[in-house]
Image 1 (cartoon, rainbow, N blue to C red):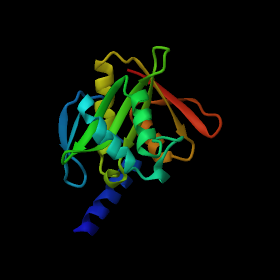
Image 2: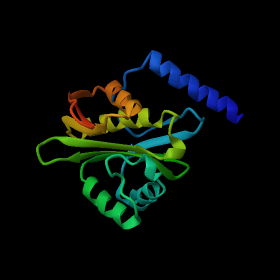
Image 3: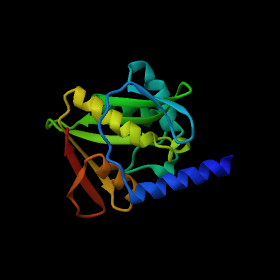
Image 4: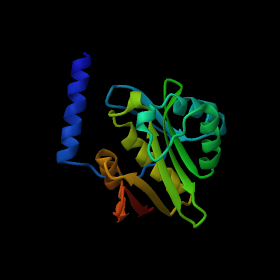
Length: 183
């Protein structure tokens, strides 16, 4: 059975390379079945989610960190979350556990920086794509109009996700690209 799910996942990835689908903003809450057959709920972040979000990031594989985030260590994670939870946020929940998070952090210029993470045990099953769509829809609903992000040059898969979500490269120089879009 495990081999079948791996073959399905590989097929979906190959199909995505050949025929990538556009990610369209949707408004949470919503529930969907991911590529592994799990019922995943996407909903706006609530303050009582804080410790569950800390737990997700504490279990995050340090090799998958991007530009120093998420930080390592519970206290550093709590401090970082206190800094980024001021804008629109959506979480992905499976079995009562937060497995993904997207955040739109106000940068003080009427723009918002996007950060998205899916726990490594849940990657490759379509959760990031759905989380991106729900996050963009929720951010738009909350009045966010301009979103930007930075992405490391070598991370082609995540760059494709951002492009499918309507982001365009605005600064292709150096080891990190800046991408943005309007909502």
